[in-house]
Length: 223
Image (tube, rainbow, N blue to C red; front, side, top):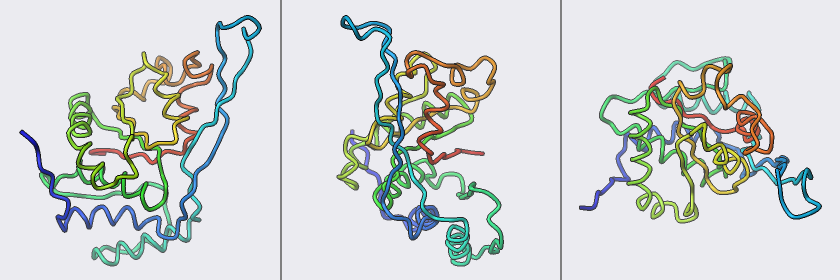
């Protein structure tokens, strides 16, 4: 059995456009930063040496006034009151149950990449069950999205696992689209969470610092 995903539903397109148009005027660009690797062992003469690798992140060029103007245009066309001040970098898209919000925010990722070159995304969900569901959706929609966005082929996605922090390093250094799926619980409790502790698999850095350095777009499912 092969699943078919409709790609032309008006209400889904409107929701996607509501996010993509926030960044109207943004040029395709990226940020770069240094990621240090400290090998524990290796060929003679390399023990203890530091090796640097290039990290790749999103780069937002727009200033607050431009974001506010874009937000006002989106609110106007959707019949919403227009904000006069940009309160934060947090924006809400509301969709009714059963309208395909998971598909919408996944497709929004590819639209944002296509239009502006953004590559780093973190999806935060409220429970392990929903995390598994999102991961499964990423699996079954790969062919669909790669057909819609051929330049995105080879994109990577993974479930954050504190025992596999090498994935976080790859998230930071890869130039392809990276999608990390995690739960609220996995990023809370700083005092006991490996995300906030230095780790050899991330070059001795705190995994959270690598993630922050990429300036990711964070999608919060069911906030």
